[in-house]
Length: 439
Length: 163
Image (cartoon, one colour):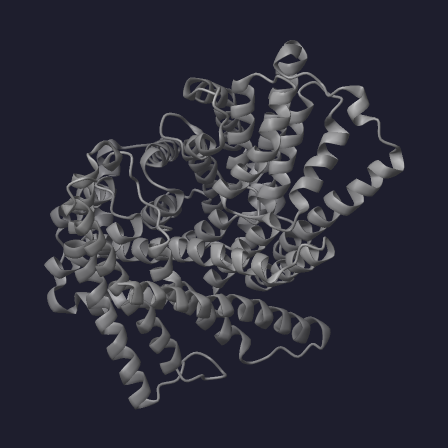
């Protein structure tokens, strides 16, 4: 049944459907269906259903609705305003204080969810008016919000990591542990850039006026204790218990989801309508993500069944690459795909194809996974086809031009490439923490 | 067509209840295992069944709410009526046959699981499988219907003179 030509035609067919505007998951499933009919005839529907069944019966994926729910609930818990207040109080005196507050807030919030657009829009709506009031330059505002929003792909418990680890058949806990230091490094680079730029050019992002921060210390501590600490505690408990191997990801996610409901109750925001809105957002996002997982599984399985692996292996053999070159080529392909596709499709299409090649070449799949996720995040932020810019456009003030946005994110893209380089040159940044994990 | 919309929304409500149930099952299992040191037999089966069922059930709702991510920067450049025509054709001629065929298999699987009384072959708890497959096939059938409705709406829009 091997027909590499058929396998080779699957990608153009897929891209044609996607670019014509058919939803990505439908394009994947329809392409798989069409090519399965061509090569396997009548049993094609049965085969495809088996893939759907295997995804639907995989308990690991049950963690996704739970993590999404946790994020959606956290968004509506009323903690956002309190958290931004607390960050502003502590960081306001520094140059670019509001930008630093926005990035730190994104880092904490990203830890609560895996959904990039939602965090970006929420933080943007709070931080943009505040920064405009202090006459921050528009490109710094745009860069801060987009870069902060993109942190959701990396910082655990990111659902990108959950899907990636499941596809690459590595432990979710190990993958979370591996990405902790690179995430912190990225946050540090983002903060460092904003701080440095505003120290050199104070007109781009002045510190807050002293009277706005004139709040007694015990009041300051009270605000911090009721906003920052519960959010951090929740995230550390969830991620920590997974990394330590105490709880399965689904269990930790379930506890996290309950935690956000209790937190919302504590802030007096828990209403039936809030609960329903969070659940509804959870359903739409979960259905979207999981249908792509189903479609991606069908697509790559049919691709492999048609001899796709031999096709790719043939290409790589013909290019005769060293392991390091192989890594760079795959990362480049991921970034290029990232300009067109969403992250879930990239992970679903690429990982099953390259994972066996990496293992054969003796490359650590976890370390490479971190590189791949940073690459996906970079393509998420890089103009012109950057989803994070599109989200920003939906909330940008009228005087902010697309040009300012595109230029504003560039320094942050450089920060991401720098992280990629550091992880590439020093694999220890990814692997060191995993050696403590799960006993 | 509004009946189909209502069906999709109703299934989403069921799926919403499943999200809450799933949280409940996880908490119950955590308490049983870590506090009473007595893990349940059924929690892991419930986890995959709820997790799998809830996303299939809400797939139609997500389509209705335009929640399925699509790459539309090229399509946006086309005139609106042409875009609707293309979208309708893709939905009706490309997506619909695939999902109808898979729904058909799912329905047969649910029926045969019921008739044979199949149970989960791996699980110690050995739950009956037909409720799980019934829900999956209902979700897939609803998704196929919602795809049909989307296509009809696109065609109607494409046929309008003043779009």
